[in-house]
Image 1: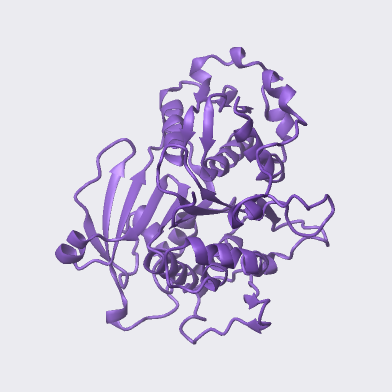
Image 2: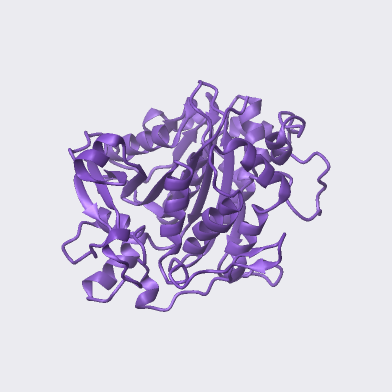
Length: 424
């Protein structure tokens, strides 16, 4: 057990105020590019934070696993804000950290914060609008089925699972069904500014995101967490869903197949069905370039840059299952109607899941997708009018390339961001 003062500034990442994924990544980059000995114990200190985005917590888990695998220690300082500490409890972050890393959350804390252990949460009461009721079920008791917090971290094990655990092939269906309940659909209908059926969040967004994760090679853990983000600084609210696995990165999964001349495309669509994407790239900390156009009907080759291979994972029909065996995933079932998912011949093809997810999130809800894996961060959203006119493009993608001096992101994190109506 160590004290804050034992780390020193060079081995402390200080996370103050509103901690977003971007600000956390910035701190990590500065730490790894300025250190001659990053193997020393590291303190990630949230003492002065008043709000933490959920992708930050997943990033912290991924960071801790990478450092653990290199026999490096990571410690945590929690917030002085009771509301932030309650958020971690109600969203079950300590349990999620333990389940993913195998390290007790209590051993992670610096000595000064050990006194916060076991304190009751007082921020969430479950009274108020539908979102409040979903965030905290005051009637829930230990041992009851279901979750105290609808949006909390949920961990699924893919290997060495006990008989009582959800089978790997049923994970996507299980999480999708969770989002198909009456209250969550009512909340989505109220707050998502879209004419899309509320069932699309469960049937497409959640189901396809989880289906993708459980198929990644060498994945042992999959975690899902979500939150209606209500920022304290006036930033527009949004529904954010994060799905993470600790398996091989998407690029390293597809790249060997491409190098060996094996197909990664399950179906060839009519030309008019493919869209164009303006891709702008930057090294971390630098400026985005002017951009170039990528077409979805172009298959990656041995000369294709890695970040374009990552983008191509979202193209219709892209899947490694065309050339290698992948785990089976059970079909989605609408529990309210007891009718199995009815897919058209095209939708049932391998590699159409992430494409359907993209169309639903970006086109249907006017949201965005963020992929974080290895040394790459990719954000995809609809192109603005100038790009539509100039490039005849439907989407725009921003790609950030992290230097080799940074610790590669462990696994694959898919963050889904949906704009919402006012939550006040």
